[in-house]
Picture 1 (cartoon, rainbow, N blue to C red):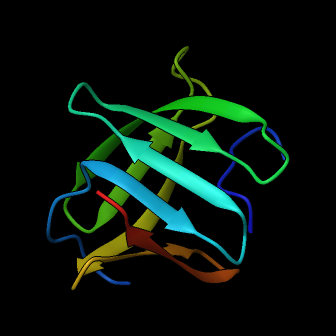
Picture 2 (tube, helix red, strand yellow):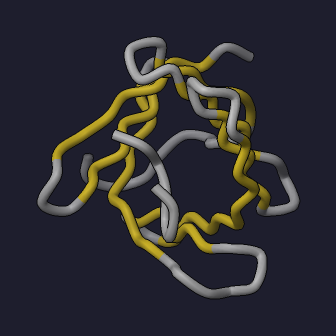
Length: 96
């Protein structure tokens, strides 16, 4: 499941900052303190998004502020779980 907006858990908790990997999907997520999310996909394609953790949701968007998407998320024991409405969940392990 590609974490994407225009291209193609239940509650927050813990820090999103840092690098997260899903080996099964071949994706790497890097959350930075300035609200930037860098997604690297298995094929090497890189997407830069904005993010904001708000309550139980993780709001993702493009730098232009278009195409936002809200996912439920949780962070527990070094595992980030993203829940895509109507699609299921994807887990990422913290690597730093």
